[in-house]
Image (cartoon, rainbow, N blue to C red):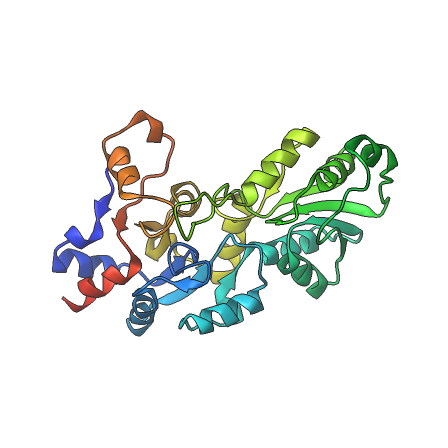
Length: 306
């Protein structure tokens, strides 16, 4: 079935659509903001959803911040959010290990958002920050002495990703009892310009290749998140809407959950992608097709007020 532009709906069709929704789950980067800049009209759209009685939750694959830090970011960008309204993958990493009754040390390839969430659960960690290599790569491999207390590798976005970190992760993962946790599979982040912005999935794929192991993935569109939000929010899938900018994470997640789906074109996915998908381009045959799409979330306001 082809994706339909939501602004093409009649007033009655749009009202029926809105009446069919109780809960809205929304991606953040590319939908509500691009890194540090708010996407025009999105805060007003979110406020309108809430005024209409919809429950609104922020579901992000970003792992660079804690939930508390996302609350602050939302406030700074004119969104209202409480801690319980937010699910991010740094938090999910701590949830996952807690569920496993993990009591060893985590080697983290990522940023401070992950270690803060681990610390909140009393989970020990190491590895954060730059790992400078003394000498050449051979010396590094020869001289590395694995820490026997490491029981898990958690991988998120790491601006200090390096050969020493790759060696250490792959070495620890030789032990099948060491957990291999990937926060999210996104290989690209919404870029503030025309340059490519590689994402966490690139680091995970590199470590998977080096270790000959597959990570347990936590964020959209993976089963762990599906199970988590189903328990936490008590969702009725038929009355839930997933909003996102990425076909392979947000929209696929929504489809797997049985939610209604709305794609926005203010992030990763372009109108050309939608046109190719609707034209049954074979390059797009494996992508989840959203029920609806819209240029940016703020355009919903025109539909509500019309």
